[in-house]
Length: 366
Image (tube, rainbow, N blue to C red; front, side):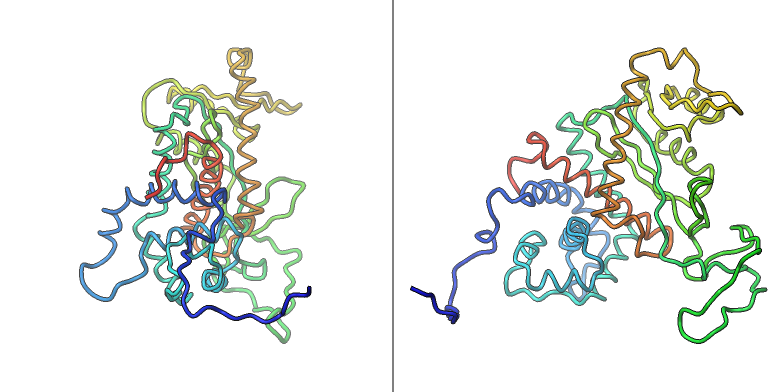
């Protein structure tokens, strides 16, 4: 017989949020990894807040909500708060009961900035990687490095002379016409009025210039986890300088190797790597105009060929981050906020990868 279309809710219910989440849901192992890392940050969270006064948003809940925003490609804090309000899965992951009120989006954004002031995302990244290290998932000797462009939240029309010598765009409306043909525009003489930290840069001679940042990643070669991520201003030397800085931060004096693409095949980068005891497994950039800084002493070994294969796995993190994590074009302004967003996205990519490795998931959730 046909069922009725009416709905009658019970006056009382004994269902828990835990009952609504399937036992095999992908967020379950992710939440175990996240909670284990957040427990180790308890002392940091105590330092971030005063001992008295009105209770603020719990930093643990704040961090879980930020990860949800990356996992589910939620475009804004306003939409994130809306979805947490009616999505029982989100409430369970963040740690809110069914009848708990959800924060206002402006309160959430303000507390997110507190994480930036104390580098909480960077320390959260470190704790998650410490779990991977305990499970013997990280290589201490073999690494790969690469960089990608992160388009800034600013338009070409905002890129104007620093001395204010030009006229504002003419015409009515918010998006009036602007004509900069036959004008030389460079980062030395111009800057964006929307995001002064963004730089005009192009990836190659075959692509157009855009206002952007450069994101850099150092990946270990055993399981392909990102061990370091940073955002810098976009310029022709940033990739190599960031790579050396990330290699310097790797603990231990053991011999290391680093795989990289042809953009790193310069004499100064190869020499700097060797001076640090790092063997540069860099792709050889040989053209009719120049020779490679890598010779047969390095390229003849099997390890060089293995590094050249594994280094391409960095693109999996970049691809995931740009399609799911929304770092193709950031919605934040200022290099520090963009750096926090990029680190959090690479951390989320690591956590997703770790949750699929059985030995990487803690046995008991905290």
